[in-house]
Length: 173
Ligand code: AMP
Image (cartoon, rainbow, N blue to C red; front, side, top):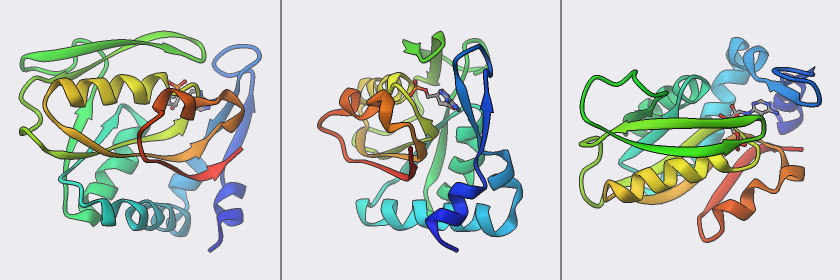
């Protein structure tokens, strides 16, 4: 399976969730056994040499890729969640989206000091979500060893917000 095969499984949905946004729908890729396995293996190939302890994924699609990736790498998985979902003491970050603002929370005790963390998401758009996760990891004493994405919307220049970090995506537009 090639990168072109993976790309062919990403569906463009115009004007979702609002007019002017072309939503990259990864559900067809996730639902395809070969596509899903190949994408997890390619993510793992990049992440493995960075020797992560933890994969951090934000809900909801970050959980799907993140859980499988953490399992394959032999890492733990830590979620970043929408406000009010986590039961324990939390730390919170607010960030700008391509469409609106949002907030993410992590458990205050989710990371051990010096934990090596891969920050993972399905799509890198403006970089706001990834930046917020990086800030949370660093506030909790973790070390970000990579920011990893299945899809990158290069024309939104999200990488500029992640300057100084090791950034990788499988499929770029
Ligand atoms: P950003 O913070 O702008 O990099 O946005 C990244 C987050 O928003 C990811 O969790 C994506 O799932 C979602 N997202 C933003 N724009 C899109 C898009 N055009 N297609 C699919 N998901 C998107």
